[in-house]
Image (cartoon, rainbow, N blue to C red; front, side):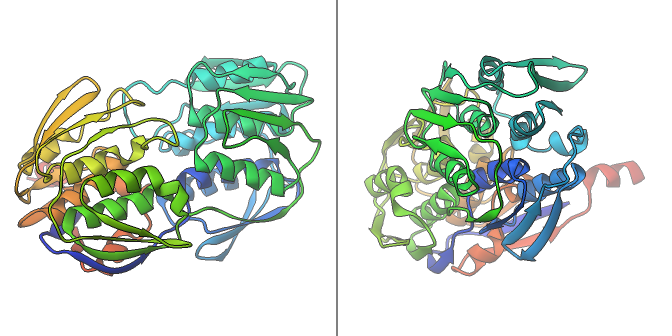
Length: 430
């Protein structure tokens, strides 16, 4: 079993470079299925979710060639409309983007239900409603999501989203790109990675307007041609390192970011006592004084991102006073609280609200990551804690953070990877 071991209590200093955005990459790569020629995609993060998506593309017949560590060439000219492999799809939430991509290209799709982090019920009803409005018949049967366009090609239509959904907005953009006629998505999500997906498709010949607003208009085209596109920097990875410096103290230059995407995170960390300087493509984060309480409510962009909620909670655990966290997106995002309590945190949860009473010091403990962002939060807690912290189930963390041990070590963290015997196997042998 592979774990992280952290010796905490050290401020972070130096510079760290942010990778390409996970949430953009896992939609842009499936969208490459719509492109007839070769598309070169740059600034791809080296994370396990991306590896899974590329493996699925290859299983479907795409020619995927690695150019360098962060660049791939994808040629889907000879793609076939095969089922997405069950074992791969169930490991990743973003596998649902293959529904929109295969429907758009072939008029039919067969995809297993998505996997990924468990935050309670995460239905894809908004995806299904939107696809049905465009003329698809969708059924979930025999452990598969089967979708078929009634006339062999999706038809443009006006879709009103009952709730703001990032995944559904992106899936419907992908599906509508090659549809016949014009599709209008109302009450659309506005996250930066939605704009990035639209920019990618437009660079290949799509006609998408309004991405980044709550009304997106897609005029269907007959073909997409090849091209070159570079993925935006990862807003949440950047925010995670910003939170780490806020928790530990120190002074770190965080490079390859879009400061505007970070404004909601910057504002809250500054309320807590961090000093943040915005540069053209970087932010400098430092803290030398006390940490102070604040209240945070997660909301769709441009509000505070739900994917930063556990990381800011780690900071609030050692802030002076009592803070209130309100989760405005998912129903079950506080599963990490018991792990924080093992480290001495004082947190009470009631539904979507967590009340955090700051303590002077967290203490290292043996904990487990229950999902991607909770795992990142445990790293932050471990970096700020006194003593040693051992984090298990790190495969969750590696889904979304490229080279996190190397990057943190480069700014002064005492963190390393260790391999321990598998307790279950050891017990069976005994």
